[in-house]
Image 1 (spheres, one colour):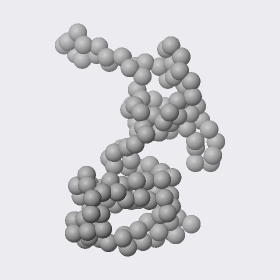
Image 2: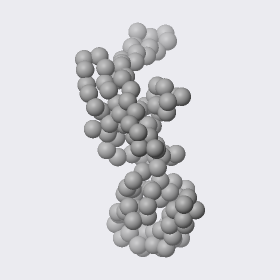
Image 3: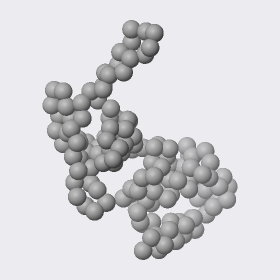
Image 4: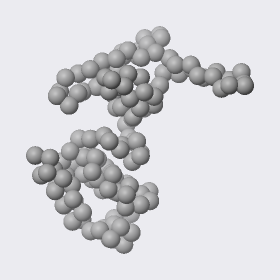
Length: 144
């Protein structure tokens, strides 16, 4: 199951807030996560519950700092490169969000758009037409 870290755990090894990983094993007090490095190697990390208290109260929260990550918000996807991106246009607020969402995907053929009256909405709301995909293709060429 894909999960996202919601806290920095081991910064020097890249286990930071918003890291996407896979749950490999669950034990009573620990969870084993794995993630693929850019070079293709697999990195694993055992994590355990983290407790937090609120000063001046008797409140104590204890949890393993992960959440399911079958999907992500645009904000959480910043600085992440993703194999496939599906953008639901009805909830995008600004052209900046559109840029971030479109620029996360590795290849333009894996960029998908959803929403009501999609071509008309893109052109009216953002001043773009489907040639906006050219932006992603241009970025791909510059990376090569």
